[in-house]
Image (cartoon, rainbow, N blue to C red; front, side, top):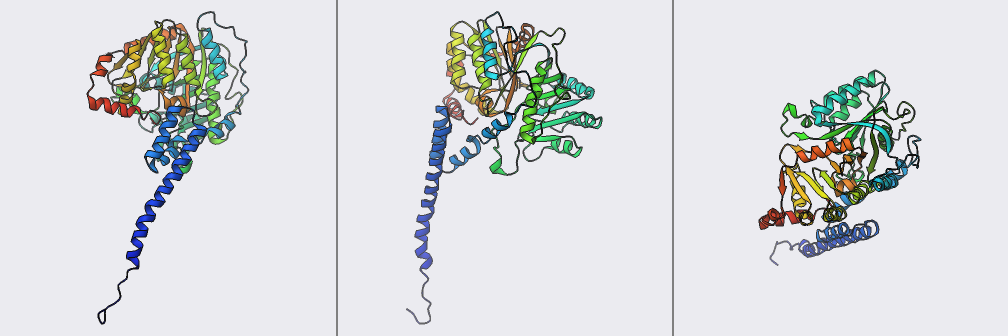
Length: 487
């Protein structure tokens, strides 16, 4: 050692190999622990084998990230709590019974199955009207709000505070000022996760308003999954509106918005309105703890003069309503004899529904499915193209319609029965979201809905077109389809 020199510090150099070894070892241990935990949870609590295999594969093949995604998107955090709260009905509605005479046609099995699946009566004596988009629906809905005397309930996935939504906000505030009981429920994600201006404006005006399953704490917020996708407006417990229509300026096509959205909503009057209010009351109780009961919310309802519609509410969600809408759809397809017509913005059902539609076509039922040429989610379009080949081979006809984007969710069977409401034809709507549809037995309404669907049949998709897609496009579509459990 030279005189005056300092000894070299080799301690740091000695630690570097240890750090280089410990860091990857620790990450590997964390990955092993997380992936093993995901695997155990999936094997114990997931029923669908395809979804289970996809989640397990993601957890092992995408270290740590796959497990985090499962934690955020794959675990149903709400089911147990939802079942405990939703089991308490807000009012003593008539329990299902055999008091109504059964049908005398081939749809008797569908009505009977709907009763068993939903535990709700198919109510007689209702009237209904079709309302296309905000152009037709918003003025009628606002007029009903302005005429309310006792109560208003409103549930919406999207509720914007724009030129269209502000009119609803003002009408609800004015109703509160004239002592009408108002309750508003906005989804915690659809209404805007970070900022929901409609919620803030209503709360500032002291209108009772809540956000469905919203929390600023990430570990308490299930983010994209488990959303309330329902659209309900009920006035005085006697008139109700339901369907696929959100509240926003994009739904008013006459104003020429930048990205117009067409949709279909329905006005109901009659005994089925009590079922719609009851659904809202359960959601409100789940969110706020407040019970809605009494004549103000649930008046005695009699069949409406001239009411020829038989209607029943069908709800689905990751609680006691799991897969109920999907089950009703499967039964409706099985009962069809002549025609099944479907219109949906997104078409990504599971193999059960795909098989049901193919079997219907095999036995001679005309099956027509109408989709947007381009939806607002390109990945869903790519995935749907990848899985529709077997339907076309079976004889189903798939059509597209050009812009503007149509967000309607409609189904008819034999021009005698229709299903309308909020649920899309995908796994998310059937098993993850809280959805609300109505099945309606009425030849007149079914014929109108069928006509609406057929008028949108613009361009038919043929098997040869799918085969002629370029290799990169087919690869892209196939990869998108693998994301079916997550879309």
